[in-house]
Image (cartoon, rainbow, N blue to C red):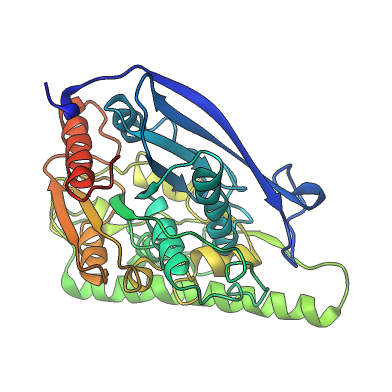
Length: 392
């Protein structure tokens, strides 16, 4: 029996990491950053009876990942795994990507200095892909001194420790980039989502797939134009608040209708094995108007850091161009969340001299009902790590 065929019982260990908060602008809600301390929580999966000098870290900007199948599958096969949550766990309303990078840095330092791991491998899953890329690029060569809103951030002074290897799996280029692919361009009035241009309404009976190249060209341009109008408004309000000079420093707002991606309805666009007429969140038309859509609730600063493709620092391709450690990029061919071209774009952009791309045929985003493909994914990751002496 090979090491990859061994199965271990897994124990879950609650992790608490804290460090001093020195940001100029502080979010005022929640426990995570109160009283000058950032409190972070995670789950470390430890295979019983299996010592290791390597830690595999999964982190998402706004989600907790311990219930996803991949981290546990890796732990069951003998890998020490940390599922790390940021200060914005399950609430991305005020999320600042630059702060999340510093949060991830605190976990990496804890893994090195407290737990004593010699090797760290970052696993960027879904929205964690662009985060991990942003982190690794800044750990290798820090350059970001301010958030897109102009607030000083701590990346340059955090002493970020680079990872030794990088896995990019079922992940997209950027939260901002996918929003520009998903947002509904038919909205004419941000304060009245019922005022729409029927010619750009993906769910209008007259706009049925397949979509012509001419329609898609107009549609994509209108999506980007809507985001840029929203961004211009955000900057205008921020500037007005600053000029007022009072204690009002931030504002929350709603962006309606943010799930109108033609790829989910037309199999001819970037064809792969994804299901058509649905997406990872359910029926796209229902998600488009639902209360939990992407970027539905946001603050001004978070919009610029997280959702504006022209402003975000967490852009996967730009970050990948500065990453030199070995990289494994895994595309799921039936992914119902990540646009088909994104994995290839990251692989092409990576500056690593050792980069590998694999496509898991038929794999959906979450491996629902696909234990064989989940096992194949774990085997691929472990084999790749072993070949590069990243698994000790």
